[in-house]
Length: 352
Ligand code: ADP
Image (cartoon, rainbow, N blue to C red; front, side):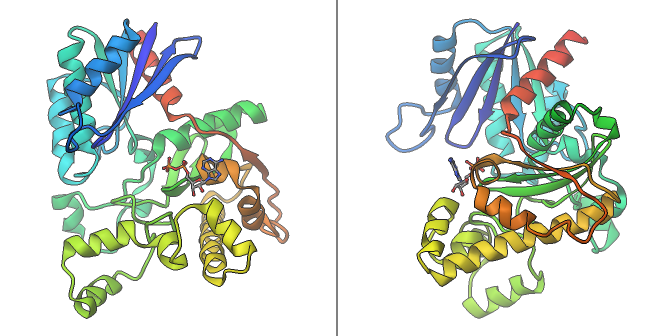
């Protein structure tokens, strides 16, 4: 069965085509500059049309959808109700869900009769218990506005957890894992018996670790203080927290860890400080999740930084378990969110 995996962003569509159940990657590619001035792709439909001309035949489609809120706890076959549900989640994921939906609607038109499955970034974290997902805010904000921790990168954390179980030759339901997805966006998850029990990202992907350009955890009172002092509105504040903070904001140089390491090694103080803060925050979260899990079999690193920056991994792990009776394995596992989506799509369609 040929399964097309679509990751539809605001101005791009990335795809991978898999043969299932062999999991062989048949082809992959991307279309960019959708809806941009002067582009030949005025919408997602036009972009997808080109992709489908290239890949010719498809048996099913798996879509990455960023936000499923509490409605979608697992992958689901797309129908009108699901489309309505994804639309409803647009208000809490305005940057991502509309683009994901545009990909689904374009596929529906271009591939009538072909089954489509939506796989949600938030779904894996739906097992997080109430005590970890409710914020210290008035409770009716949760009831009326859906304000709670959702967590993201779920497909990646789930994929590397399965890989860890395969590598360790231990069933997932016997393992305690901490998975660190360290890319431009960074998140860390505590996984007990294959279920996410806590994760660092929150209501939005801004919470938690220091990231390329996102601030991660900060004093919430700072937001109004900065807005007042700098005389900026909510839109500008949002931009600063998401695009001008994190490694880029601290170093004043870049969000690219490769360049920061180069600069730090050449004696640049701010580059070194940015990396030290990045590592320190990750170590704090690992400490916290050790006490959430009460044990640990493996610490897993994945994504751009996690997979390719041994110096950062070393700094995170140095002395971390010296005084602990817990001696976990440390694994580096390349993530493959598209393969996880293909597996889940295949499983759902076969099980129908
Ligand atoms: P995204 O979240 O955008 O998918 P990535 O997972 O590609 O991001 O991670 C980007 C980060 O990984 C950058 O900070 C970059 O410096 C770092 N990185 C380190 N080594 C590599 C490498 N060999 N290839 C790509 N990114 C790398």
